[in-house]
Image (cartoon, rainbow, N blue to C red; front, side, top):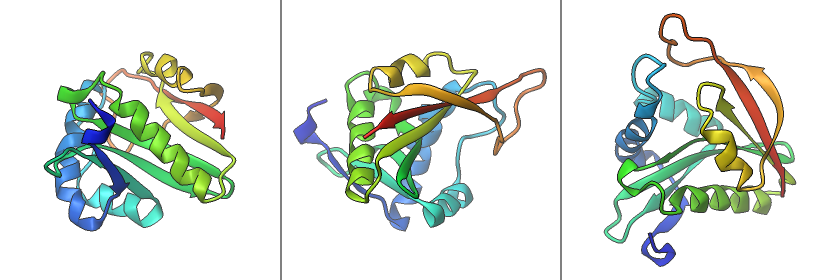
Length: 160
């Protein structure tokens, strides 16, 4: 994916309908949770607390998104989603870097994110972007875990 072929911008309410299928496809790998990752109600609530950045391809189709929230002097990123057909091409990295730049411009000195313990593939990916494990948190799922599954959140942080 060539950087000049995409445009990253702040999402608006109009973008929610296009964001939902991209997010749900990207999170379909999380088969340990019931249901889909997001819907109109969840996205609306998140957009009231923070913002989403979206990446558009040349024709203007949303192909990735990431949630960003300012928490005092720290930025928080979550729900990073890249269209599965475009994964592995640097778009996830570009979204994280755009979120970091967004938070830096708003006065943040550090970034935080959480990954689920049931996704052991994620900490190494974020370590490559400069994040380090900084703690754990209780997992407060917005949708139920499948029977017999246990999960916690791994907090990862980075100084900007």
